[in-house]
Image (tube, rainbow, N blue to C red):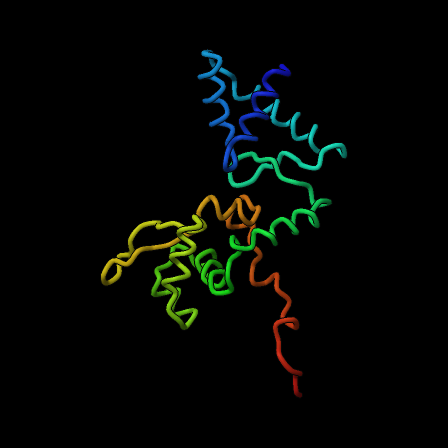
Length: 186
């Protein structure tokens, strides 16, 4: 069975985005020219997760964005943050983060709705988010002019390390005192 583990490792390692169990099964079935049972693949993935959780590896096999991906462990955050800082051109601007948060929490949402909430034109931010594949067009609204509806993509889940929109912090998670300015008067 060890050969199955190695093939799964290679597939996950080479995949540009999280690789789902069904995709792994399809690849292996085609390669071996025989049906590979999904329970064997899932069992091998569980064993790999356990293997990479040991201290000797700086990365782990994680389940996110609907699939599996190798990610560095939190203990190596400092070295990774230096690398990411050096690649800052991939960072999101404040305007893009504002726009992305509106899309994430209000999706599906039109550009007009985004602009109404932000109070400024959001064409550039939406365009950049589309280019970075963090948002995608989800359809058209039934409203006047049938504007495009935007929502988050699978790459958004991967970028923020979550499995679903429900994993995003909820407004109730933010404590009120931190968001207030000044002192309360009686």
